[in-house]
Image (tube, rainbow, N blue to C red; front, side, top):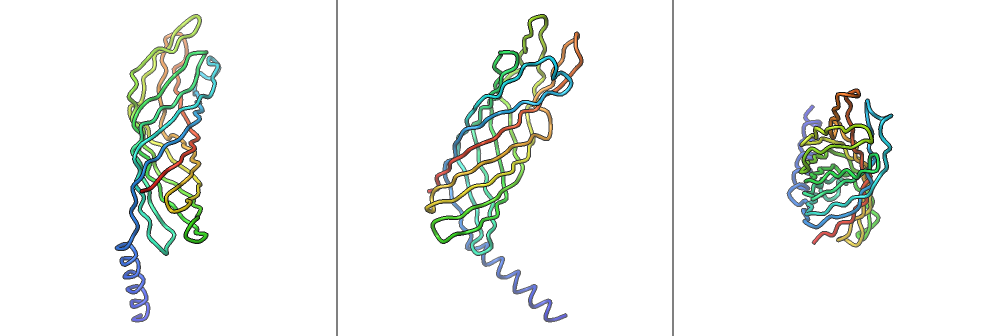
Length: 199
């Protein structure tokens, strides 16, 4: 029993020591996104097309050396765009991703990682009508979207990071309402390609 306690105490002290000397880096992150809209309840009434968007902002990375674990977060100005019935629909707002990373190193100059975590998106856009030839629908936008991120990437030359992230919303992006058709909703999923530079 004493041996188990000593081993547990030793492991705890090592983790504390590693956390004390953890690497914290600040940088800038930006990239492009491809949005895919999924309608529910009104899918048959919309001709939808995917469009590109972008995001940019400061980022922070926290890595525990020797353990292969890290956390990164960012505060991004983000714009997502799709097309419904030949009308462009934009989501513009602040995006806050927070991801846990598992890092596999290939020497000091390169490593790869997998990541996952929550993503918050605060929409700045006001509610707008989505027009059809014979009727219009009113959007009731969700001001705060919650999503899950799943990503892979590579860290290069100590300062650069490339990533590919798939963003899956947990709640709807907007509710659609019209007296002539059934009420429905839509969600906007995004595939993001990012590049970061750490100082």
